[in-house]
Length: 346
Image (tube, rainbow, N blue to C red; front, side, top):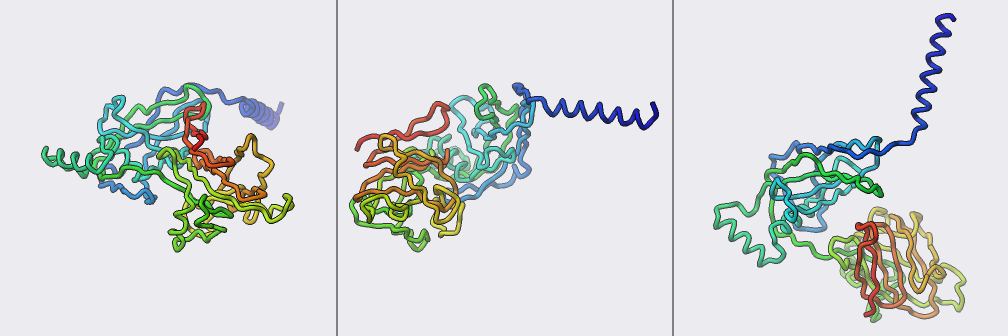
């Protein structure tokens, strides 16, 4: 066999081996190590905010645990005022881009976490904390904060691992920041239950913020990212469900940033002017379906003005609509993470 034939034979063997390797299913293994990186700016002053609308963030990075393959993981951290992370002395902080090992955390969430760790849940408790710190000769407005990472894979039992190391930011601003329920807005052919205000797709702008106070869905559980509210849907003009144009239509707005900012809108479809008619999709008076960032509307045809309770989860990007006026509470689903609405008669 000449030299060229040997070379070609070797290439064929390598190609076959590579092909076999590529055909193998990834094999999971439980990782034993997980590391987060000391922040480069950990000795600089880290400002927090008491304004829940403030989107400012800070960063902590990590390396992926060895799961045996390149897995899509969830990265988050726990926060403590002590490096030991004793049970009951730390809280969880949510990564804004959960699959990214370059973790981004809101400074507002950090501020509220510090208040929770300090036992501050009211203005009176805050005043007592400040007085105690000053009496002890301590600065009540700055502290060292410790972080450790958590990583897991959705749906894989036992995949959660806590980082082997702890890192810190050494000069973190402490301020009174106790969370209150967040909200989203509804725009569409809806009115308040008493009929005192109608929306009719009022422009979602700062200029109309006062009017949109009547069209809020509010968190039943603070921090759940699930919102609920009851509104009146208009009556259809015709005597049959002849057209989606005769439906009561609606979609949601996370912020009042106008019609063109897609990231602030949650609808039935990405496309503008799209209407998803769900009139016949209710089961026992309740509709449930997916939601997306987009300009599509949901629509329901009613023979007469009808009350409807709406629920939107930006945690799971799901929405519910149920005929009638309901007091909505929440419970965790079977996964222990995803909130589900519970419909309670008012």
